[in-house]
Amino acid sequence: MITEELIDRMAEKCLLNDADFDAVVLQHGSKRIQTVNLHHLALAARSDDFARTIDRADFITADGWPIVSLMRSRGIDPARVTGSEFLERMLAGRQFQGTKAAILGADRHAGYDFRGQLHGSGLHVVFRDHGNRGDWKPKRVAKKLEKYGVDLLIVAVTPPFGDMIGEEVRKAGFRGVVVNVGGAVNMVTGNATMAPGWVRAAKVEWLYRLVQEPSRLFRRYIVECLPVFVKYVLPHYWRRSRT
Image 1 (cartoon, rainbow, N blue to C red):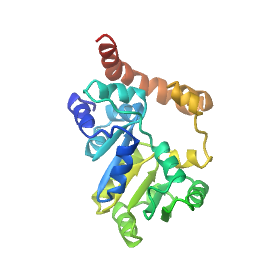
Image 2: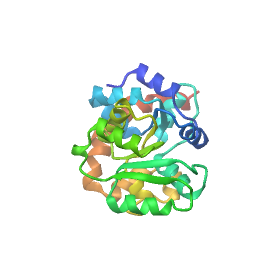
Image 3: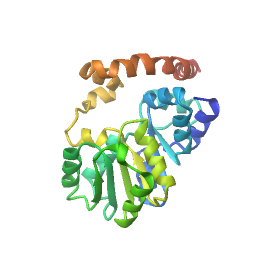
């Protein structure tokens, strides 16, 4: 269930830009960063368990202009901060040099490609599990991550399961950083279609994806997300635009 208190707490722990995101990751230590988009809110509206998963994240980011607008209604002005752009920065630079990372989820080919593309970055993928998510036991996963000395766990599974398993692994004793990125590993490696830059700049990425996969995304975007947008985001957007 979405409450005003939940939105307030999201604003309190919202990372304002990419630099803030990277700084939190580089600090290491036990924490979880959850990117939040309109689909997350739609899931939270239907599931108290998932709403609590958002609430338990140490940090959140505004992934998409609806969440940016919602956060602005709480007096902060975040940039759009996405999991896919975080991974692109990992591939492009060396700011994460020396970090030991693990990937939970994503396609096997995407995970292999991602590890190879990181070759020049100084970040090392030391553990990957692309198997059946039903076999993932949080305590067992946490022990494997400890064995390999993992600093950063990239959970590349779509919500709600990806965010919830990331929280469970953290609760099971993983002492590194957990970042939930959904399908971003598949996207940045070219194993799934990423919206062009001009589409993202125009804030119509959802429409681009809907055209690409109408049978899969119509229910998510129109049936599930649109009512949440109208109920929770639009009133704040209108109120702000009139002031």
